[in-house]
Image (cartoon, rainbow, N blue to C red; front, side, top):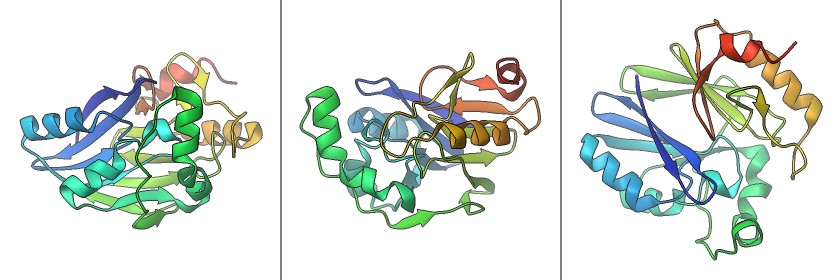
Length: 202
């Protein structure tokens, strides 16, 4: 699986294309739909689905437009449905922008689900803490973690709706049990590795 990172929106969210040959899965389509569509066209790949690692608006502002453009399903964990429904009001509060209504989830993801991209697989791991419905996606030697953990020992906020510090700590420990060379792709900032982030957590 190849990974293409696109930095989108006011909050500099990492949108990822998880690619296998001519197919891709769009992860955290935070904004800038035209940029995402242009990149997909340049790469000559076909999107087969899109998902948000959690329900915060900065990870799904272009989901509605992309869902319509490609006629593909949108995935989310059910526990973050209340946050998804508040997309327009929270986006207005934090950015001052009026945004489109969020898409309806076509499927709710849960722990252990498998998403296939060509012959590659991504396994859903429930990693609550930043939100109740936060998930990570584990592939071969890689994991997409949303706002669970950031390079340099950073962690996701727990002072927003659904946040829970104890659950966040537990989820981080779960991720840091993966092989040390596992590449961590966070929702913001640069990628890192399990080995590197273990230095910051006891």
